[in-house]
Length: 352
Image (cartoon, rainbow, N blue to C red; front, side, top):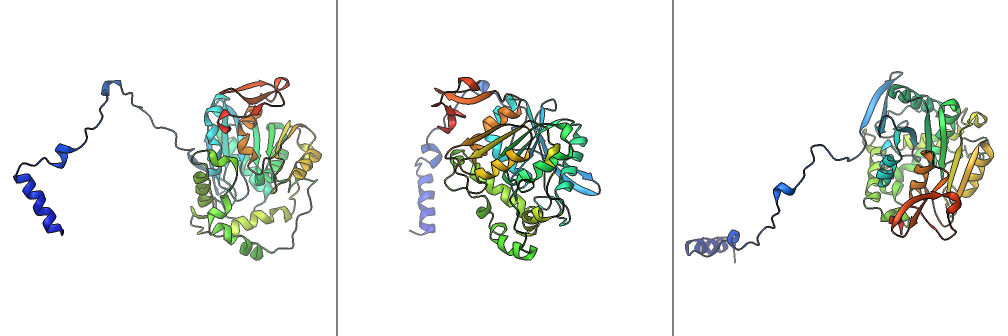
């Protein structure tokens, strides 16, 4: 049957009084409009990106949480943008309940930050302090994930009197005096060639097959979004230069931080099965810092251990390190460390 024939049948049906589609459609369920409460504001869909001028250079950052909350500088993994912070917000309600204000400053060449190949760890640490000063933040905690650990050591050493606590989660030890000597034989051009497979295809950078975090709705999608921001949002079109520069920073002059200046209580979190930053790296942190109050190895966990136990990281940052996040029955709660049994399920009940 062609279109003309179909149209003729419809016309005949109307003329003969045949019920229309509207007449035969299933009724739409209704509800009492007076019983519906609508929001008069906007729902949260992510932290707002802000910018200020720092010594003639645009600095991009996010600041999420109550202004009277405990400020926390969030340092994401290697090659990530400030959007990586959103990957922890599956615990947003817990973070807000603990009164934590999260601040993240975009690193050199990633996301919207302009690339200056001459900038080093000290430059970034100074930029973070400039943002904190702009926000009126004096004392702050630091939490570093993976490659962010290299920057955390420098930031903590630059302003030790302002650091409330330091939290290193599967964090790179590449700027510690106890580090394994880096391989500095690869040129920038060679490194760029090695990394193009990641910057041209962001899924290769942020894919985490087999990780427990994949049960979190939207987590992997958000991770791919961060990789896209890192390598494309500012018109980089997958340019691997920024990532190559960051890879080679441990070979730069003054790459090693003076960790003897770091007096803040330090918490370490590691996955026993981490093959990217293995437990030996945690031991380098223990040897380099004078005030490690707890070093936890979660057996069987890999390089996404920080997300699996992010609720515990937040608890420690909030100053409740004498308590552990445990699922008891169907309830997630904080209990004193001494009351945690060997068979306790650690973390949010949603992980079960």
